[in-house]
Image 1 (cartoon, rainbow, N blue to C red):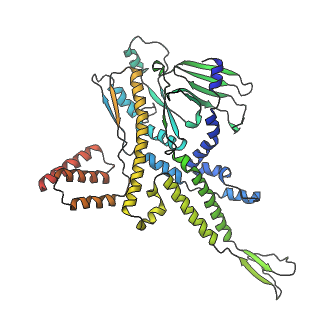
Image 2: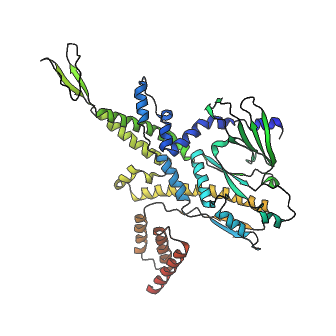
Image 3: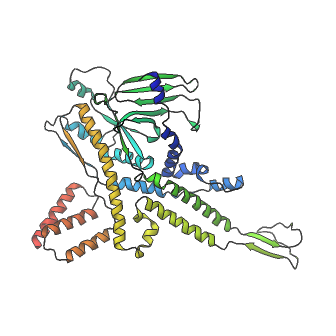
Length: 465
């Protein structure tokens, strides 16, 4: 890349500039807790002509019911409840050992491939996409043979996570292939997106054949190339970066963030109003000037025609507010395809038919399968590239992430009982049905125990038939 091309590469992509504020909000809405508490003034609306001291007190008392964060974590834990199945086909057995070790520790920090993918998937649900870079140890010298590389571990690729909010520029070709990616490694901090400070900035640029680390001085805007060279996938003429990109329909945070924000403001407004209503305001009906001091330990003196009372809300607006909060909560869950997780939906289970609940669970399962396909697609591309870069003679197949324990176990038992009552005279059917129910109930047991249970079920049915 020329100097001009490098300078262009570190500029913010227009899409990133327009979404930066929203992505920051999405991160806060997911995290909740102290992070949301510290930024309450960013998200708690100030009422028209509200006195500053009242608004600041409301901000100090703000609380956050984090439905979206729980929904996203539920999807991540449910999708990876069972690990993806990785099958290595290596006739020579020469390279299998590396890949098995890679699956157990893919980032050189002891993180297994399943945990690593779960974190990247969570990022994608929050930010719409996530990025993983494939790296190799730096080569200080050249090697005369593969054995020399293996001896010092120079051939051992590993993964690093790139946070979506740090990817400031990118480019795709007409075929949809990523041809440029710029990652902000350091600063600057921003008073706003249009007012950067004078801190120096550091960027990592990936092209199809090389990486470039540049530093931009915050004072004189001087650009310096600190390091450059071929990256891990230079031989493949592709970026060493692999992404999980979700469609608008599957980007949960973007779909439900403003519903969550509306719920946040209305729940805090209701809590504030209820708190204020506990302290009734005295009302004096008098034609004379009123200068008495009122309080719990004071008395008041009234003329015979004076009247005294207390203001108290009738409560109609509170009832409407509570109903609206319940509707917002339901809408958050419905928008995220997990209506079965809604508290109000569960509390009204008597009015919900079994077929309706099964339909809701079916929708959730289909969404989970779509997520599983996205994760498997990224993992396949990554592993295939790793195999080619290392020049290994093997194949790795990726499967799984398509069976989920979603729904109520009692309903499945009832459905199975109805099938058994039909009198189907098939030992194979009974074996498979009993094993499916047993494994659903004992989802967390290891494979050895599952095999033993399956064998015992088959033996028992064979004996009683």
